[in-house]
Image (tube, rainbow, N blue to C red; front, side, top):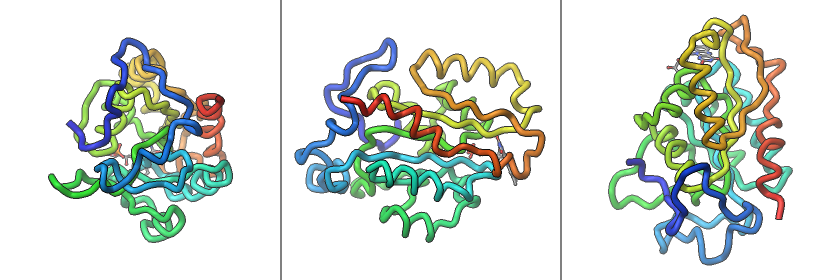
Length: 216
Ligand SMILES: Cc1cc2nc3c(=O)[nH]c(=O)nc-3n(C[C@H](O)[C@H](O)[C@H](O)COP(=O)(O)O)c2cc1C
């Protein structure tokens, strides 16, 4: 089980359980270190950006900027492989929060407040398939697997090449995530796995997909 916050009293599946809209969901009673729920986020809704090890990942600052402009407080969770694709210091300076990648030790405080929404961008073939299968062997996957039961809205922007996308497991994974209520972006598989189509990757689409979830 991941060490991520599961909202007390969250309704059980089936279907993605509905939570209060993000903007209205955070209150002064949540998010304090003393309560063990992580640091407060100044009253703003808190967005986790989960970053996987895809060639475009170095551009995640664009998503962080766009989210902050839409009044999200942002924290980044990177897969262990994804860490190598981003500029850790730049991201932490931009968000004001430490990047999370590994589980904390028992008794350690939570470095981030609980999420009001999650954007997985970029999402790799590997992480999409493991997430859909319920595998939780990275902190990022643990957070994603628990998001369903907690009713936290999740948008995913897959980024992979055409050969990966042709694998039958990938189609099945997307279908399962869709039935779980995950909001799936429209990025087309790239023929160039190394760059992954960085020039056309639409980071803002994650926020567009999540926008209705914030409506009162
Ligand atoms: C330069 C480079 C670019 C890559 N780009 C992608 C990509 O766009 N999509 C993808 O699914 N995998 C890509 N990979 C492979 C992933 O990094 C690899 O599958 C990794 O295990 C994924 O780990 P994660 O899902 O835990 O982040 C790339 C690898 C390298 C070295």
